[in-house]
Image (cartoon, rainbow, N blue to C red; front, top):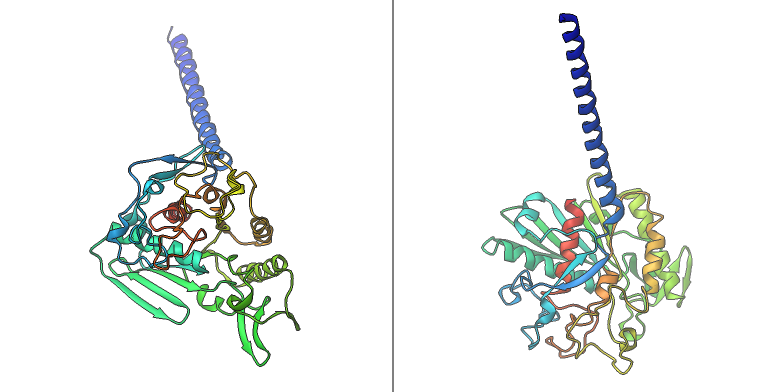
Length: 361
């Protein structure tokens, strides 16, 4: 009888152990699949704009750091519906921007935006987002040569903007101003930052009096001009080689902002008689732009494939193409028609929410 009871007890123990192992294995499989689901299914750059009356994230009139190019409400924009949209990815949510948490996580660190006035646009937005989160904090403002630095002193977080429209060098020589497609010397300063957010495209097709160079140089050859898309790719390739050889991505997070779209051609959103963004009050309702991505986006993506170190594409192009309603148009100090840059507050805040997601995940 005792022997039988012992055998019965051993069987029960064996069954329980088997069930426990099966459950543990099941939990492991579910967890593994959950991770794969996030990796494979959730692209934070694919989604749609949804109405959300809890936006904007801050009142632009309370931010004293907005330049007159981007301060649409100050310069007379009455329609404010463009402020009431939130980006919603298809298969997940992005965290709502938490300025205090962002500053705490990056205590003592330096975040630098490098590029043209689109980078300035995003930098202005992030400064206001931080300022609205900690409005009474002391900000140390410094300017030196090509960069501005706003340091949120309680946290020791510096947010810098470095003006470099081409990323590669322009050097004044006896022959004139030379755009050197295979030279990048400012990187010695950039590589010391903790977060780098690069951008370049807006100036590559500049011509005439606004073109800041006289010759393009490749190796020892100087040209009066060349195919600009090819020049763009060569310049980006120099940047990619610099990342591969000079940046310690164990210390420095590197991001490249996607191509920021402009809205001057209404045919792109089925309004062929429209030639600017002046009267646009709503986003495009579809989830994709009818003409597809600009050619420069494909060039950028091709070059990024050559980078052997971790670089995150802050892929704002497609989602921003849908926001024909969010440019300054004539609501700026100059009263000029601007369908290239973005109102602050506005779409650039979403770029920074996506930046926040990318650098804290």
